[in-house]
Image (cartoon, rainbow, N blue to C red; front, side, top):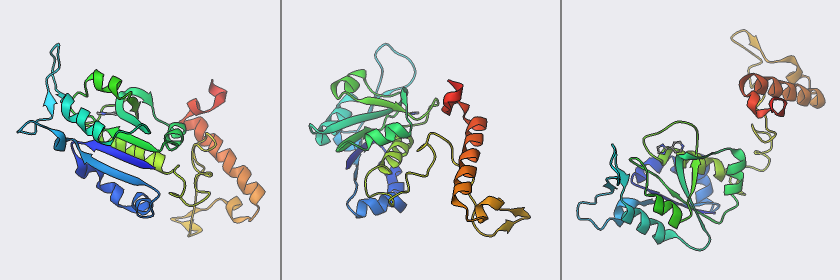
Length: 223
Ligand code: 4FL
């Protein structure tokens, strides 16, 4: 899959040069290009912000550099995403469906956002990562891209996706590694039993208990 990220702060995407995403890029499972919107300014001062019609505090991103930056990567296979607090809230199901696309373009917003006509022209999908505002769209873009890349075939080890949180709609059960006793706290006996049926049952119970406590909204019981 190919992902183009359009941003005023290309350096923000250094984390994609490490760990699992970097490995997937090297292996050719993912192509991620980070493109500087400022390279598309025609203005001699490389100005990228402009005042909103109707007044008010804050600035918008200039229309022309964003328009030209998107056009430079757009094909008939592209889907354009604009991370924004005004979008539907992102979740694992959305990550999985985004991962089915051949080409994604992310536009990282700055200042108070972008001109509504850009959203319409490119049929941008607005996606929120939660009910809060950040200083820019880079961190939400990174979160969405990182999460969806895990669903791209070949990025994770086979089977890794099946056991994690949300694959069954529940939060994860507690996990333990060595030593068997740490700071006076012992690993639950059942995990040492070798009885895989009992272990699975215990994990399911713990996952349910945790979800009921922390995120009852995830359980159908609550609906
Ligand atoms: C985007 C916040 C998606 C939450 C500032 C610019 C944002 C955001 N979800 N804040 N974009």
